Image 1 (tube, rainbow, N blue to C red):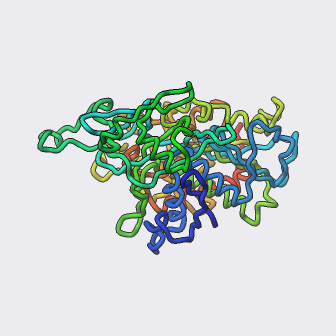
Image 2: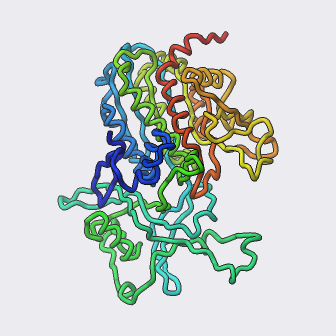
Length: 492
């Protein structure tokens, strides 16, 4: 089965999940590493940016029989029972859904949704990135999200994202790019020049956090670029950087008209620990939940029982910009979910009826108990890695969980023989949030869940290899049995 498409020199190259190669060498030969974790490592290694994650999710869904549709199309008239569909927005968000066999136009049908996000804290190349200092060629970057920025020092970094190029016919095309070799580095200052570094490591994110791309040569300094049009970016970035991008995409530098580039850690995601019980990786928050959601929906659509399935429409939503508040056209506060619900239930009455039958699982990552910082957890709420799904609750509604939604989720997990853990933050600490509260505003019953991990928002995070299957099982149970379970619940 082909699980993803690796983008190389602007072309899509299919990679077999059972083939040998760099993507699988970290885990495939390790018998103790669960199969679900192996597939996840393949996905995350191929997805350094939201652009790649959405692209690779689409590849997996199409392999399971999903058909891509566009928001601009009048696709409501073409929806069919037992249909499998997905659409994307701006290459950075994705919504996929399956239609049950008993679905009829004009009849209220609930929607069972797993909502995740595909963005992570990272560094992004500025629109004008050309920098140099004391013989070093540097790249101007901006911090995105709340990263543990000191973890980005002394790492082998490279570039990935999308590049807008002009074609020979004058049209423009957005190409994905992922440069596999290390290009950049943010070096720390030697301890001999900062004797207090182990007592307090502080740095200025504007002046002391700029990555080095190379050493300046006389020939590079002599290159002169004249902007010939408003859409030209040749003067905004160093010719050496544009040359690297052009070579990777097999285009001329002047054909590059714009780009969105993210820095990423070139060290591969791997399984680790004495029994391969861990996953060591960047972007676990929240590629972990996103990959599991894709796999659960794809597996559900591939199952023999799908053709006779009844109940709710099953849906996954992979959002962008959660790390900065979700307020964008591709974030959870956008029109993506409301628009989907309205198109599936086009009258006010149908919409309200369908909404009352729907359920949202907001799936993000959670904080595992840290053996060196146990006091940071509330005493009775200490999730462990590989301990199963974590239900996240907050009385101030930073999480949208309540007793009803928690009970429903527990019963779903119970169907697969799984276990759940509980998490609440200490009273003397602030609580993070997710896409759950903002989506619950439209009237969706919502539960906030996740999997336990360490080092959230570091460039290298730690999660459990067995928790991959735990998440897939929980999401699969939602798709298979929520409507039936919901019919057993009576609320006066």
